[in-house]
Image (cartoon, rainbow, N blue to C red):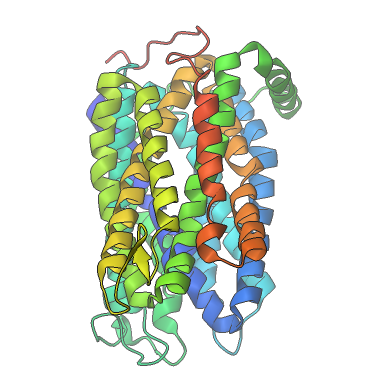
Length: 449
């Protein structure tokens, strides 16, 4: 018999297994490699944005329906198996994005398949959170899971940088080694191995999840389940104004999560343009952010257990707003209005500290956000609720990058260009005012054992 402790650890392993898609493919390894292949940063960024945007549209449209379908059938593990397959196939296929034989469209299609698999699997694993503990325990459980996931992302990033990803100039890894397993640096096989590594990592570390996590009430989907699921989603959307706390929370999280994603996406570009950072500098920045994210997600989980998720989220929004304002005042010429010498390391150290703060507050707020979603949701329709949560996260994911692009173009300043992030965080904070700590009055008990 699977114990409660094993179920919780099995659930943690999804975060550990899936995190490399974000860390290695979306941010630090594969995206910069695509820019190298295309040689035109603007064209690469545009193509990357369109590809991720298209996947986001599919996720936004289907997430609530799939969640409702899972609630009707009660068999979430079946869906996790299905979308895990998409994750593995999509990420492994990125190996074939080779110099001299590179097809942008095929690459983007497989990248989108893997990303859709990750996002949809996440909906169903998140919906299992209330089965793991009581209302008081889920904040700590969510925070610990997020911290464990960050740690997995860190370990996978270190493996890539030390043993596999080669420099285009030297053919050596970050520490001066040849790519492992005899991989050919001229064919960029070390860097391309990020796809298979991400796929194998996921497949291996999902084993504890599938061994130890069980759906409480797996049942067969009834006839007409898809139609019924669609009807329930439309009914839920129409009824949202009648659940003002849930409605306000979906709106609040939509804005502050969009702002946080904007920080993640544009942090490296900003540092490269304003502070003249190299890839190594950006890699160190990423490692610091991940370490602080893992540590403080764990700390934040305990704060959530003691104080509840709303004050934790409020505090994190205030911290991230401060960081968004601070970024504007850090440049090679000065820090917070104080001039520095061109050779000074003060701007670099300051930005490293800001990056660590982003990682810390970002890790806490993401863990607390799914804990808050559990408190806002109808316990009988938890997977649908997390489908709506995914919809809220994707429906307006264009706002931060578009507003930063417009502001940067208008002001011709990278520093002023990031100011829309401040507005988005403040909008999220404003809507959070109407969110009740325990939702709209629908109670649940969570796992009794």
